[in-house]
Length: 215
Image (spheres, helix red, strand yellow):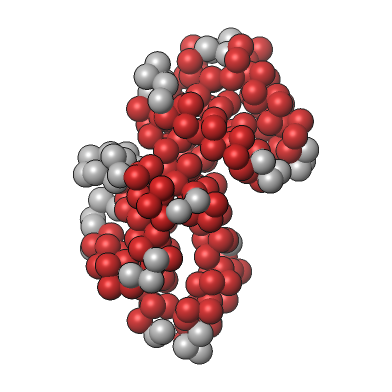
């Protein structure tokens, strides 16, 4: 992603702001999805690794390796099996990774079903169920309506939610997609000035604000 962001800075200086966002928007969103999925995996391993069986850990690693090798269908199937047979910790992580692989392989509608199922599952930790809503929102930004996006992430955008900053960033993008630039800039500026917002969110927000200011 570093090379992409270097081009972002260069094109902003050339006042190609709006065209730039249209060109790189999906890459930025893709980076955000990878960041939050990676964070979920980290949280999951911190919470569950010590208490899980070696066989489940090995199955998770094997499925992840298949995805890394771009064997997306096989990886998704392996994660699906672990989601069915694993215990609570691995089930949530496996569902997130299964859905991610399905999106990459072009089966987004199936992924959306998994996100919705996980979001409604009261047996999993809140950080995972709310992350499922966030990732569903990212998918809907390109494959649904902006109203669906805002409805999907409304709860997790509230202060105190672990994914609040990312959810509000997504809502701002939905307003921008609707042509409501003033509202989008207002939300992005609030995120930029939010001391609790993660650094990666602030970086994307600052770059987008710079692009919009040169429009």
